[in-house]
Amino acid sequence: MTPRRSWTVLLTALLMLVGLTVTAAHSRPPARPTAPAPPAARQTLTWTAGDDITKYTTAPTTAVAGRTTIAFENSTATGNTMGMPHTLTFDVSDPQYNNDVQLNIMANPGDAQGGKYTTEVTLTPGTYRYHCTIPGHEQMQGVLVVTAGGGPDTTPPETSATVDGVRNDAGAYVGGATVTVAASDTGSGVATVEYAVGGGAFQPYTAPVLFREPGTYQVRYRATDKAGNTAAEKSAGFTVVAPPGDTVPPRTSATTEGQRNSDGEYLGRATVTVTATDDGSGVASVEYSLDGGPFLAYTAPVVVDRTGRHTVAHRATDRAGNTSEAVRVSFTVAPGGGVPAPNCPEWDERRTVVVGTVDTGVPNRVTRNRCTVNELIEDEKDWSSRALFLKHVRTVTARLLTDGVLDERESRAVNTAADASGIGTPGHHTGYRDLFDGTKASFDRWRQVGGGAFGLTADGAVTSSSTVPGMGMLWFPRRTYDDFSLKLRFRDDAPGTGNANGGVFVRFPSVDDHPEEPRPEWVAIKYGHEIQILDRPDGDLYKTGSVYGFDRVGLGGAGVTPKGTWNDYEIRVVGQHYSVFRNGVLINEFDNSGGQRFFPPRADDPGTDGRRYATGYLGLQVHGTTDVISYRDVRIKEL
Image (cartoon, rainbow, N blue to C red):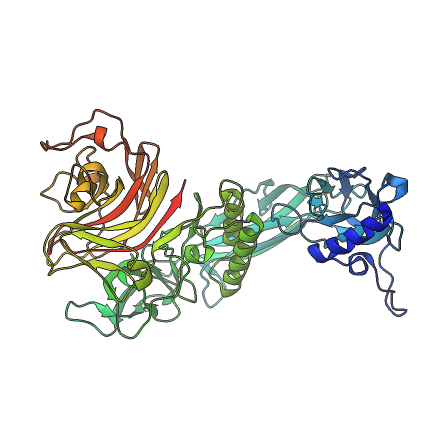
């Protein structure tokens, strides 16, 4: 078989592999006679390829924005002596590059065009990434930087201004007005924005300008681009009047309704209705905040149907600009009432959206399907492809933008954080894996040793028994872990006014048939480390976050939350260095160096010398019938 014939057979297989066809990749339908002719291309960019599978023979590096002819030649004239196929493909999967040009051309010397193709596209300012999609040719890649270019910029920027504030019936702004100036330039870009008040001199505009003093104002504004073009002066006129003697803010109140149990908790959901009254200028707006989140416009009763302790704050502003102090109402939602828990891919109620380790600062709001933004991002999933993760985040944020959960700035911030997180890239591809996800199947993978007991609850947690006495441990016997990040949620469910004593055991050897300790639960106590959970103000000196017996955290540093609240708990162990986080805040670090003694002393305790394992098992502690504690969403990521 000739080399040319061999490559023809190989090309057919490759086309099936990468999902391409020659005609679909580069053929263009004939223009309809009635269609207007497209604008003429401003430039021609040419790529060539040969026998080399590591780089294109020639490739442009820069271009100017606008209509462009793309030429791709992979022929004998460009050095292809073997009939080697190549593609020229623009990557549209990575948000850090331009993705507005769909280009995918396959060429080889033996095809119908002799390996020579052209097509027309429109390039925009920015950077395009191009590459070859033939398997084994992945090193054939590069970037094309596109600038505005196209000759001198003679077009000035576009400008606009908006005036915001509370207005009376005559259209005057009561108590103050804020002027916001916007400018854009598609050529060289905006260089400066300026404003002037009345006949005064122009001054730099850097932020919205507030006018509080009563009077009639004329604000002039303009902008200049980097090519020196200055926009024609525009102006915005408005009047500010003093509040009509009204300095008393509105009053707000709230009622909370729903089915309640004997402890006063709302079963399944609680509905909070806010009302506001004002005896002066009248109510202009009402706002609410859920669980410390941002204040949002109140337009309908607030339904809270996630289990746990919640706080709703409410306030109002009158037409004179007076805003009331926020009033708060707190309550607990318990499982039940026929309302199923939301079917969210993860559980993440941190106050801001965090992608990997990148904190966006965007409020972690509850979305339409009752999941939080963090939970929909799924940054703890095992993403093996960066492109898939970024595409997923773009899809989620686009939907939340449409639903009004995120605005444009917040959507960009989340996507930028996803890009910076590195999730899906080598070294970042392994996410958190569930060890206990609330199902019976995952619960059955754990084993109870010692005293006490745990049982499944309706809201997907395990809760220690209030009737089975003794101290014991629910441990995960399936495998050991070396370096890891362990995440879980715990809740203090101790009866009455007491606090539960619990903990998480890490890095302990197998509890079965230990040569020095016949009590299985004591194998973890003596030869592993217990990361303490205890918010009690008295009693044991080791509080939440302590490495029990060795590194003490006091109550002031334990990040205590109200009893009955779900808390995020993360334990990272790398080498012999331990880090403990509560609700995203680092509350303790401990180096497990040798020679440290247990305190208060225990005669048979081996100290840190007996606890310096490089790998070990995991367990959840129960102390007794009055130390009722719940755990849920136990997951681990190997580091």
